[in-house]
Image (cartoon, rainbow, N blue to C red; front, side, top):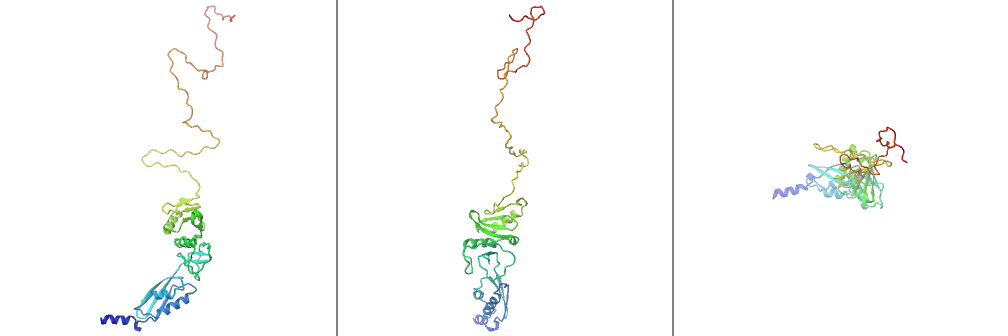
Length: 294
């Protein structure tokens, strides 16, 4: 009982009071003010009794700080690392984080994708659903693709569309399954067969589709152990005449003739001879030509 009371007394004793405060991680233009608020709040604590919630409350007016990492250095030191939001897009000209936090005053490094703001930006967070969803998609982009993001729009039935610099458009649809959609887009972009696509549809991340590629006819390949498949049929030119074997009239089948009889032919099929028929043979024995008929 006595030991427990001593520990409670020592926890708040000046013997372990926080006297040295180190703050790191701040880059915002309000860094000096944020640091001053943290140091002031920390000096009311001891290294055995650090109230992280009080530190967070002290800088609640600066939403640029996303989280605090605190470590006590017994007996009198306290280290505070501020984790700031990372700007992922420019909405109405203001940098915003992936969760929609408006990062007023934070420096912007490099180029960020632009998002149109239909409403005026007030407060510390986006309230317009379209802009909020666009920021969420931008925040999920892989580090390798972030510098290539040019613009994020909301387009009718396509939903959220990401424009890439020197690349195809990415059709996201909505802001659900953002990580899976980015992974699908990354795989398609890395596929040589998708080179030249004008868009990549990742609304179904399990079945992404690349569009705008030039049409190509691929010869089918037979599976191993089966007969070779026929090559693909190419379209005939417009002025070519084609015959469908299924509708072409068949030639009449030849009929068997009785021995000793001459083949008969119909008028339609009888052969036409260019020479006159020979005269009948002489049966009188005179050896002369038969007189003409009287």
